[in-house]
Every structure is written in structure tokens, then in C-alpha cells.
Amino acid sequence: MTSTVLIAEDDEDVRDLVALRLAAAGYQTVTVNNGNDALTAANFQHPDLVVLDIDMPGLDGLSVCQQLQGMARTSRIPVLILSARGRDLDASYGRSIGASEYMAKPFDSADLVERVGRLLDDARR
Image 1 (cartoon, one colour):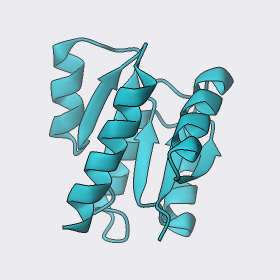
Image 2: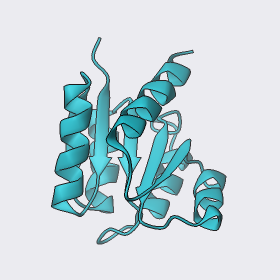
Image 3: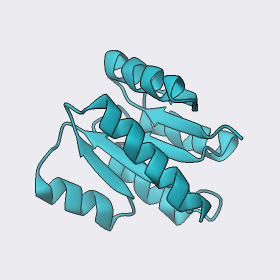
Image 4: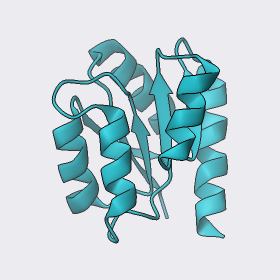
């Protein structure tokens, strides 16, 4: 069964790159460009994993992560935050609100695919 990854990223180039790399690795992708659409898509599409940017229009990625963790329907979906905020403090905060993984931009595509695979494997256990 193919896993579905929701990608919430307002930068079209980054969003397309992430979707392309994950599709090439065999994942189905759903893309949105803001936090409000990410919440809607997570509720209706029920993806296996969410990749979230922090700085997006409307709801930011941290708020989306908190809301996903707070709803029974989406609380078990792993969240990987992919952000230009690369400080250790940002990563610690992201994890403290429920993100499973935190990657700073610029990122290595192979590392992203590897982490997505590991998070999905962990979620299946």
C-alpha cells in the first residue's frame, strides 16, 4: 500500500521539489500552500505523514502541528517540520509541540526521503 504524504509549503519551488523527490521514492503526495489548507487536507485526506513549513500564510506550521496533535482524528499522524528556522531552539520547540522530526532548510533530498521512510515505518509499528 502506498503511503500518502501531505506537504504544506508556501514556497512553490520547495513544495515541488519535496513532492517530486517523495513521488520518485514511491509516495503519493498531496500539496497545499498554507496552514489552513493543511488542516483541511489532513482531516479529509488523512495522510500517513505531514511535512510542514513553519512560515506560511494564515496559520503557521507550528499552529498546524499543535492542532493536528490536539485532534483525535489526526493526533497519530507523524509530522516532519521542514523550516528555514535552523536553530536548535526551533527544533526543540517543534518537537515539544508534537513534531516527530525537524529538518532545517536548505535540506538534502536523500536525507528527507530517508527520514520520511523511517517515520512511516515507526508509525506502522
